[in-house]
Image (cartoon, rainbow, N blue to C red; front, side, top):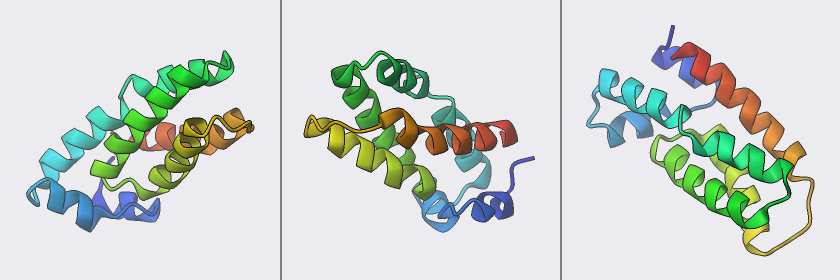
Length: 112
């Protein structure tokens, strides 16, 4: 079950997230479920698997905005790093960088 305490255990800035949702917990939880269920997570993974850096950049950039607005700080940092490396057309092991994002996202989504 999703609770503020559970989210905080994952390092999520619930104070900021709630503030962005007018301090309405039910609304914040609804937005979290929508954000964590965003199709760009799958798009990003598929683009990275296919080495499609342009599509991966677009998906990572969109997700960075989504998770940033929800104050999902443990996801925001890695997605920001992935976005900026893709923006600069850098070679990196993007799938390895994305793996912890996917794992945490899946754990959080299961709580929703």
